[in-house]
Every structure is written in C-alpha cells, then in structure tokens.
Length: 209
Image 1 (cartoon, helix red, strand yellow):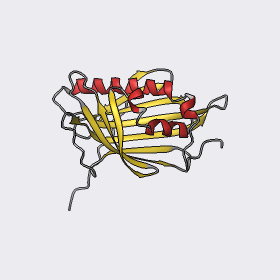
Image 2: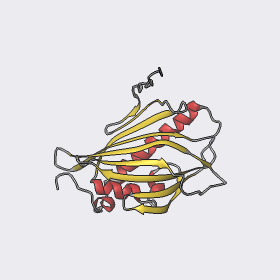
Image 3: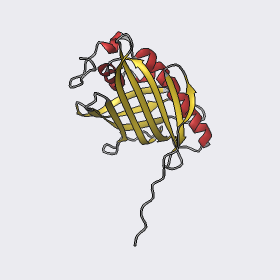
Image 4: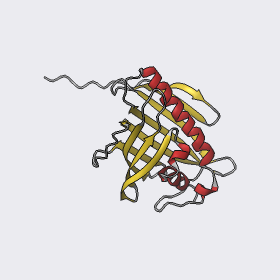
C-alpha cells in the first residue's frame, strides 16, 4: 500500500518592515530553499487606476526599483500579455531580466487578481543578462472605501523568485526585500495621481458604482 502524500505546512510570516500603510514580510519557501516575500499596502486608488498603472510598461521603470526598461512582446487578450523587464546591474548582481506571462481577472466580490508566470512560449534570450526564475508572482487587489467614502485598495503582492548567480542567500534576500520596499513606496505615491485615477478599464466593476 502506497504511503499517503504528506503536505508540508506553510510557515508563519515574519514581519521585516512596517509603516503606516505598508508592511513587508517574509517566510521560508518549500521551493528550492528560496524565500517568499509578501508586501501589503493600502493605497487611494480605483481598480481601473491600479490596472492601468501596473500594465503600462513605460511606467514600469518609474516605480519598479532598478528597472531599465520593460516591453510587451505579445498581447494574448485584453486581460493577458507576455512582457519582459530588464534590470540594471546592482553590485554584486549582474544585469537581470524577466520574461513573464501576466493574466488578470475580477472575482465576484470585485477583488482583482493578477497571476504572473515565467513565459516559456517565446524564446527571447538576453545574452548580456541572467534570467530571473519566477516561481510565484501574485497580486490580490481588494477594493474598499475609506471613512470619507474615498476609493481605496488593499494591495497584496507575494513573490518567490531565484535571481541566479552565486551570491549568498542572505544577501539576495536583503536585496529583494529592499527592492520590493522601495517599489511599493513609489507605487503608493504615484498611483493616486489623476493620470491613473482618470483611467477606466473595460470589464472592471468598481466598488460603489
């Protein structure tokens, strides 16, 4: 008789940094001894504003830490696309890049989820950079109203990735944590601006509308 499969319980999150509306946490992952990182933030924004912000590849180098450029390779549908992100060299890391498939959907409770996966369908190799392997990339965006009825979002981003290279794990983790902290801070400042809040995304229902 075969032994029943055992499920390794997930470990608790350990808080790394906390500010008024932003928390960065981490915990060991069961994948390749990597670290899972979670960022949680409350930001004044509509759902359409967030999706417009996050999908604009020209905007990516402005808010995402250490990014040189980002480019859409293929638009599969209105809610799915394949894109690349090229990162600058940061000591002791060499230049890095991501090639991802991004797909979003809206749930019945109006929350929006974005799933990020390594894209293997198109072979675009960057010979001058090391490819980051993404094992998990997930956004959960929950709409809510502030006390004064202003649109807000509870944003939760979780990621497990392998930057490659031979740097110590503790250093790779610190660089990743600091990068996500810097990026989320920048997003919190830029996202509420009218440029994004005046946008609407077809098929997205807003809370209270």
